[in-house]
Image 1: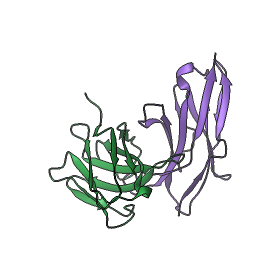
Image 2: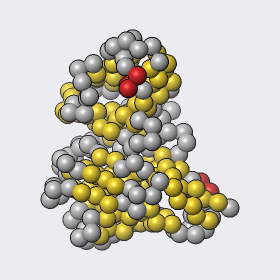
Image 3: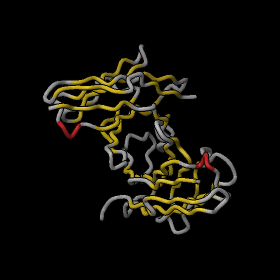
Image 4: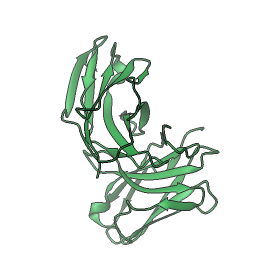
Length: 117
Length: 115
């Protein structure tokens, strides 16, 4: 399809395990974002990539969280030693280009629901 | 720090009627953007409308309009002629004009449209 694709759509894991969440943005979109949405809350910013580099990772909650985008397209969010508090929907979004004054929309995927038991 | 407040957890409206979803914000940034996103049950966030802090006119996109009152720091969404498909969560968000979309979201309002 032409939209942002996220896999897996659902992931159940045990406390302490390692998890990878994948995002395939819209072709040609240079900007890629990860957000996290806990139950009953709005999404919270995690990290922003422009091309291959993480331009802003100030939203990552701690050093258990890491994200990569090695070729400037697909991105992987990696969570080590998962905790129950990591349970949430992880949303990926992309946008076509970076403007000086950003009026553009973000195109979101349907998210990866992570449950840590 | 920026903050978005949405005080209506849920709203009901009859089909074909208009509805206003409230949003207030707080920021010390001189330049910022305000957004509304719709989240249906499938989970993806769908962009609806954008208002820049220096825009003189209220933004409109089809049946959506943003009632921007800068002095009151409010950015309410007005949906005219509601449709059953409008039933969803609605999130107000803002960013600084940094050149990218580091959005701060509110907690959302669930809108139910009845026949």
